[in-house]
Length: 205
Image 1 (spheres, rainbow, N blue to C red):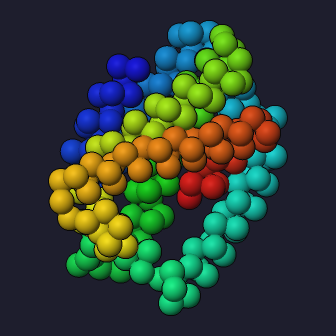
Image 2 (image 1 turned 120 degrees about the vertical axis):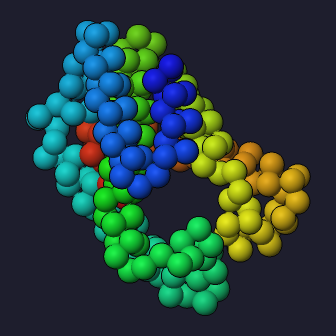
C-alpha cells in the first residue's frame, strides 16, 4: 500500500520518460513485495504455463477494443466523446510514443502488476476471489482520483455533462472512481478466467 500511494503521487507529477522509468521501478518493487510475501509467478498471473493462453485472450480483446474505438471515432454521434484537450498541440510522433510506449508501459503495466497481479494474487491466496476482487477494484478506482482532476474541462463531452464548476469537477472525479472500480471488477474476472495478467492488459491497451 505504501508503494502504491507513493507511486500514485509521483506518477501524477512526473510524465514522459521520468514517468516511464517510475512505472518500471514501481512494477519491480511490487514484484519484489510479492516474492517477500512468498508469492509465486502464478499468484501474479505471470506463470510461464499461462502466457500462451493469456496472449490469445489479449489479442482477441485488443481486436475488439480496436473495432469499438474505430467505430466510435468515425460515427458522428459518438466522435465527440474522443475529443481531449490534453492532447492539443501534440505532434504525430509525440502521439505515437504516447500510444505505443507511455500508455502500455507507463500506465497499463504498472496498473495490472499492482492491482490484478500482486495485490489480487496475495489477497486471493489469503481471503479468496471475492475479497481480492472487491479490494483490488476499490483501490483501482481510488488510484484514478489524481488523474481525473481537471478531466471535466479537458474533455468537452464531460464538460457538457458536469459543467466547468468546482462541483462539476468533483462529480467528474466521483464518476471516474466509480467507473474505474467497476472496470476493475471486469479486469479481475478476466485475470481469473484466463489465469494470466496478459488478458486484462490486452483490454486496457
